[in-house]
Length: 201
Image 1: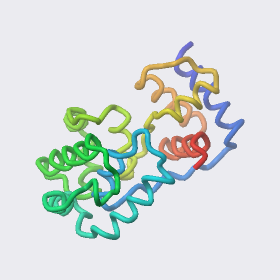
Image 2: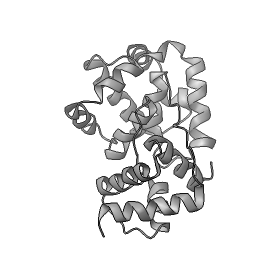
Image 3: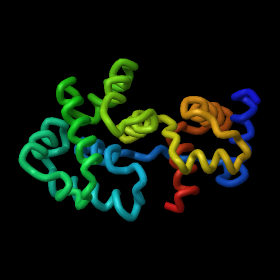
Image 4: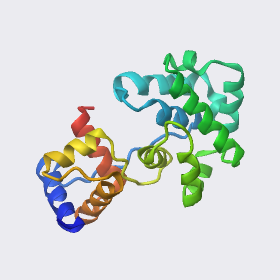
């Protein structure tokens, strides 16, 4: 089955279960420490119950970590696992590595990261960080206001419910993008609406 016909099948499922929208795009974060921790800690984590409250507290407790440089300075003298109450060595290491990569590329603010992600070479560079996959790249884009489809387990489950086959990441993302186009919805808004529906958030 072609991508357009799969996309129409998915769009019909969206309309049947979620209605006609509009689906607002999630706001993301302006605090770069929260952006980096969100993308680093969220895999296989209950977002609303576990991660989001910790990110809000991080913003309050580390106001100077609003920039990448400020966050990097905090990481040099404080324990991120303790600050996040999240004892997962690999996720902490991912946050440190993303921070160092962005700082080395002079990416300091939300707007800087939004622009930096325009370049495919920069997205490839992020993929070199252990723990960062294609979904993470799309997800971090949404956290800084880019409107993208980040395909996670919830979006895969929703597509399976719609009768779609198990597709590779890039192909399923393309189907969701086509479906958003058919429906006239913002891509990030559609992604978030599907995520909230399947996650029960």
